[in-house]
Length: 131
Image (cartoon, one colour):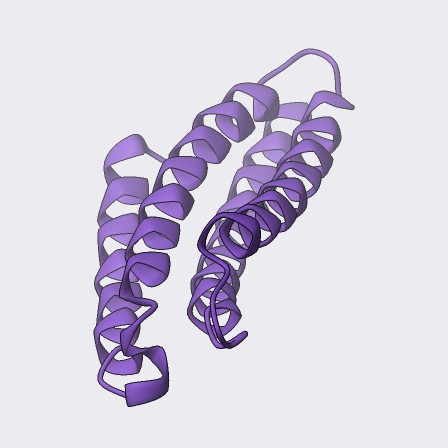
């Protein structure tokens, strides 16, 4: 997968995520948490870019375990970042409701599906390189 193809797909997914963020923010119970949706969207875009370059580099590595290590590292990092974000937001902002979690996890879900798709494509590059 080329960087150009990745960025086109990332742009499309980001447009979808932005539409979801805009749509969910029209509901009154989520209106106060607009920054959560937009900040998490930005964070996941950056994480997707890091994942792509790390995954592409690992796909062509001589060590066949590098790709698995990168995949596992990305997954664990995203979970860790999600936990820190939720706990940090809850501690700092002390929201009256827990509805702030829903916009965050919608962004998390959208970008996790996208990153899984990209990693599967990069993994195929890994197997082609071995043949």
